[in-house]
Image (cartoon, rainbow, N blue to C red; front, side, top):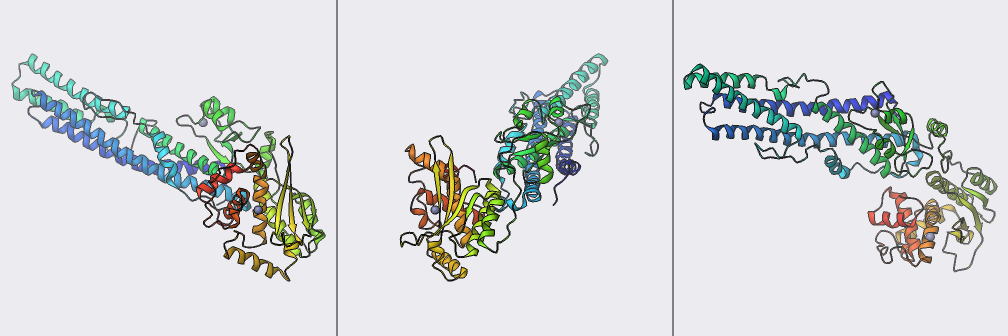
Length: 515
Ligand SMILES: [Zn+2]
Ligand SMILES: [Zn+2]
């Protein structure tokens, strides 16, 4: 699915509104038929005019029918929310794929109904309100309709009694007069004037029409925004154009890039737009994801003068043929300010480090100050393929260096042997890495967490002491210390596309970025 334009997005929303309307019309049509049947019952009852208990019973039955209708509309809300939220979760995934394709290393979180309860509570219009006549809790709109029916029947009764009295009618004549009045009302209840009996024609902008459009549009927007936020995306553009009836907020923010969370400096937030009246009932405005990595969007962002921490081209990896080429590639593509692979004997190792690190920098935007190879051959470090070295200054600034250990890699006769050794260690539940690239991803995990881990340790508020000691599936290496646990969590995340919630929390508490 390509990135949709404004017209296509409007059409998508309109399709959802149309689909959801079908279920609503059915609920209303059935509701109207049942209410009419109750009114006809009143007309047919000989003692309706004279026995109060019978009248009250019928009024109560009418109220019950509205209560039933409310139940049907609740069901309709649930179905509509589910249908629409699936479509808009899918749209968010498609938008990321169309604009951020190679940043989508992690699989997009599967659709879950976790937000749906929330949406239901949010859109649910049925605020508790007591209807004296029937004593049930109903949507105020349904309360008004039930009250209209009961009032009409009361008026018909009073009128019939008065007219019969003046004309000196017999009880039979009086009952006939009342039946006629009630049947007339059952034929065309004032409460249902907004829709015809077949449920096919209804007045524009009636309450239920508005309810359908508002529910659908709100769920569409909320799902879309939640899905983006769940994937750590922040920028959207407000679409929908302006017309004579446009709300001032929509006019002001139309075409503007907005930040969902306020995390991206230089842009107004979605809350600002909503706070000024945006997404009002019947608002036709919607949002679309804006990617810093997508050419047309970058232009949009620049035009609006937004400050973006790092706008970088997504780097496409090309293997180098020589060590010198690999060093140049790393520097020219913004992986590190300096690169020195001189001590490295195997070009495949340099390429694997470049490839994996480029993938990480593409995604998280944080490069190394330096990547270098070291020739360390002591027995002590022969088992350490790479390490990350951070220098953290008192003013909070930091530098980050990735060191590739020739003492480890140089021991092997071939690249295959290296990979075999790494994989065997994994099979032995030592670490999560399967190959050289994974080792570099692990180090990048340190790159993202070193500062926070350092500060946490300094402040003696060590990150979740004890909380990390669930190494099942993480490997024994993760049990060395908290830094390794966090880096291994990061590695697993990049292998599987997801991690357990507790690991995600642990990592996010320790990192400059959130997974
Ligand atoms: Zn609007
Ligand atoms: Zn490590």
